[in-house]
Picture 1 (cartoon, rainbow, N blue to C red):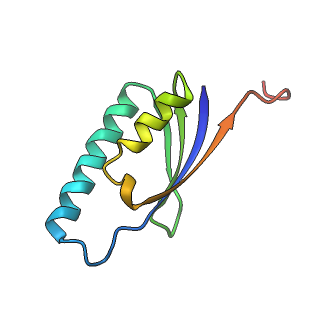
Picture 2: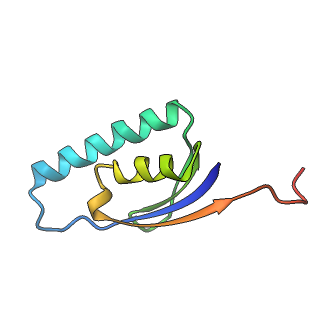
Picture 3: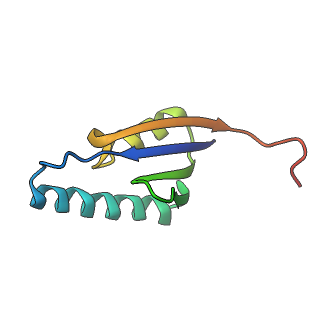
Length: 91
């Protein structure tokens, strides 16, 4: 199942810098693991924002929820999910 996911990150400015550094490092490692295994199929930065548009290729809604809620930055994100399907004009 394919999903487009927009993630907008808003880390509190007063978060301890060492905590921020740790969370961001864990986020990078986790996202790269998911990219390598094919579940995080595309990751695109939205210019000028601490945001991304991603495409996930997962087995179920439950798996996508598990992935998103396990992101280290999850507590600092606003997430919008759009299910995708094949367009009849796609080649």
